[in-house]
Length: 141
Image (cartoon, rainbow, N blue to C red; front, side, top):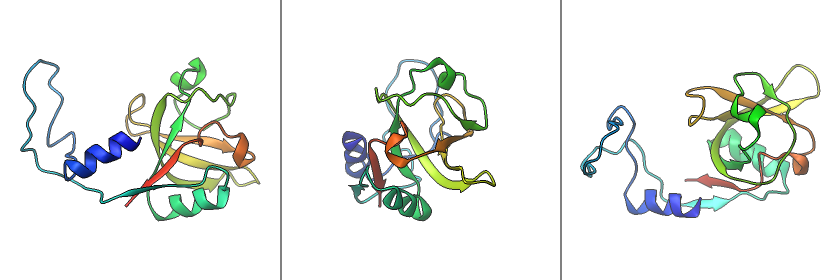
């Protein structure tokens, strides 16, 4: 994660897919594509503090890492994901909010664009330390 944020800062931002669409052919990079956003820094959010995570997500999207190797997660389509908690972190996603399902069960909304474009994954919130989603947490600013 740190290298990704360092790249964005040094590059003075990133563009969007609509500004720089994927073509699927070898070629050279368009280094002149307009930047849609930039960040000026980032900080780690304590992984053992549910309050710190919810506070960060309430203010802005937060980058988190997950274990995406489970087949039930790879074929996830919608709803609150309730699969096993794994810790072999191999994929980054963005937490964009949180809520409840009307009972005591709370969850985070995850914008997961690499497997499911535009979908939101609800990770079932049990005790914060048991959730496999939230081991490396960084907020950009």
